Image 1 (tube, one colour):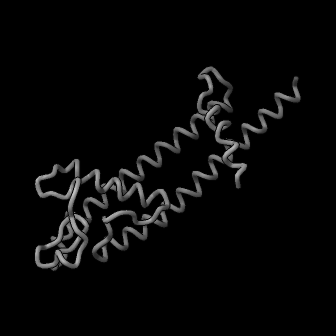
Image 2: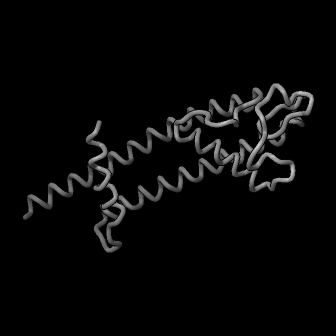
Image 3: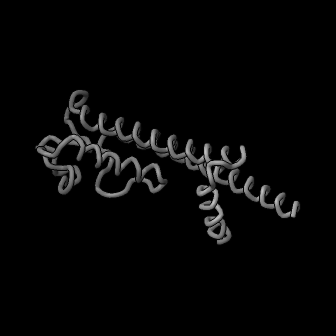
Length: 163
């Protein structure tokens, strides 16, 4: 398991390859770029869904208890809403950042982190779906990184055999 950390410098060298490189190196760059874009897109979409679920829940159910807002009568059964992004006068961007924090922490296979927790059935179901999706994404990312490292090892062996 410790050997994985010895491959990190090799991974960084792959990212720093010159643009006038071979097709295999361009393929590596394309894989890394695709991974970054896919992860960013999935986190953004998850953030938007989480934000919408919290903001619109009061239209679907009574009592309205969600991560975004809670009716005053039920404030004692929910988590405290203090700090960045929790004031009624905070901007949508600040509330989006709270959503982004929750989704990013859930996507990185840390589970639910901090004071933002699902407060109703819709949010719990979405949290479960997000955790399963994050495991799938995590496995795909590990597979792609392993493929890149294996290809780099094969190219290194070929170059050593040529010289």
